[in-house]
Length: 138
Image (cartoon, rainbow, N blue to C red; front, top):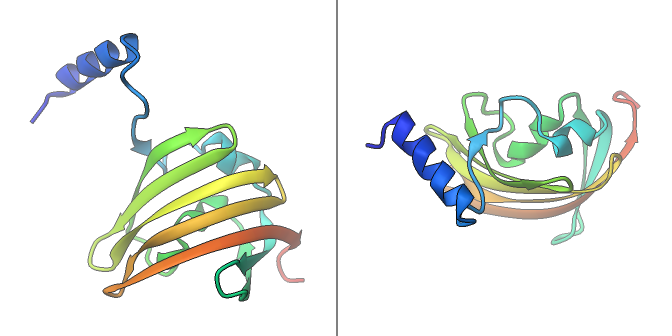
């Protein structure tokens, strides 16, 4: 096991040499710029695979990170990659499965969302085009 000091020193060396491409960080820590930009409210998710539509009240944009495990509260999340317009998070829900979600920001009211993983012992994969349609309850 690498100590915290050793891990930081290794990361500093890799960063200095340009070899460190992405680091992981807890996604339930301060919101990333992509999540902070997404407007809360009523959202319509259009599954581009089967053309199904789903309406969802989004009070906290972090809820979009684990749509495959929406009813599971005890999940840990880690940022795999992020840029100003895209965020990829891996999450694990003990006893319930895991997933990986990428959110691409089109505008604060329009996103592309790709999610895949294992829930209830079965695989899932969805690609959504999502847009905010108004306030929740409409």
